[in-house]
Length: 279
Ligand code: C2E
Ligand code: CA
Ligand code: CA
Ligand code: CA
Image 1 (spheres, rainbow, N blue to C red):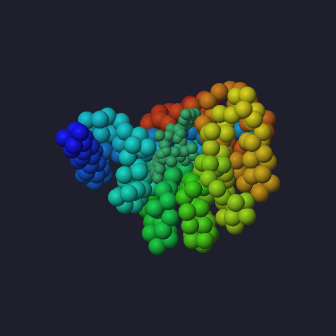
Image 2: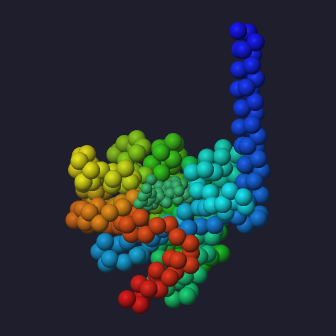
Image 3: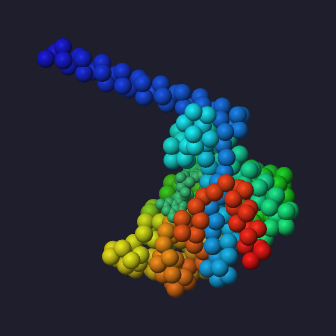
């Protein structure tokens, strides 16, 4: 029995070692990915329900890995956050998204509002404020064209710190959006203290519409609350025309999801914007 026990132990140790090695390898690769230009952004359109046009997009990070192919953010952002690399990667995302948006503007395409996701680790006043200012200056993008998406959980991690940071970002002129709304634990009291422009309702609530579960009562209440606070409301994860109809009927400002458009390479979004301009 003792023998067997030891055998099992060494088995686990080996497994752990190999998991550790894979992690270390990934960490090194992540380090090199920036220099090698392996990151790219896909853009997912946002539809304005009033005018029925795409007036915004969200930049979503991808890693074009030399062997593993296209890797999604869920598979490397947690490690990037743990290792602190997210600061460098996040700065690249911000820079690239602003550069691309300005480039479309200069090409005469209708002005887009570009949303960029921020990780909780990026919510450092001394780093984020100078970065945002610098990126806007070097790209020439007007601040109101940039929207920062911050998750409810990230903001609530240190809500007391977040308030002054958001106030200063707001003073720069960028828009602020509370992402994954409904999945965290923000009290309505705090919500009022954040200088937000919009709430982004998490897709779990959108998927409840016509599912037989709550029949969209939660989302209806969320929209009413956001509107009461004079915030714009964006629904993410809209996958069907039924959901889109429901959200339009309940005065949701913007829709995002596979039904509107998948995250796509820059060239594809550009084609969509050109087609829309011609229409
Ligand atoms: P998120 O900000 O909530 O982004 C929405 C995610 O849902 C995206 O996954 C998008 O592709 C996916 N999605 C969009 N429409 C639909 C739909 O109709 N149905 C379904 N089932 N899914 C939909 P993605 O691109 O894999 O990103 C996952 C998460 O990674 C994002 O969630 C965001 O939190 C994070 N992320 C992405 N890019 C960045 C970045 O540049 N920086 C940081 N810090 N986080 C990022
Ligand atoms: Ca987002
Ligand atoms: Ca979201
Ligand atoms: Ca989400």
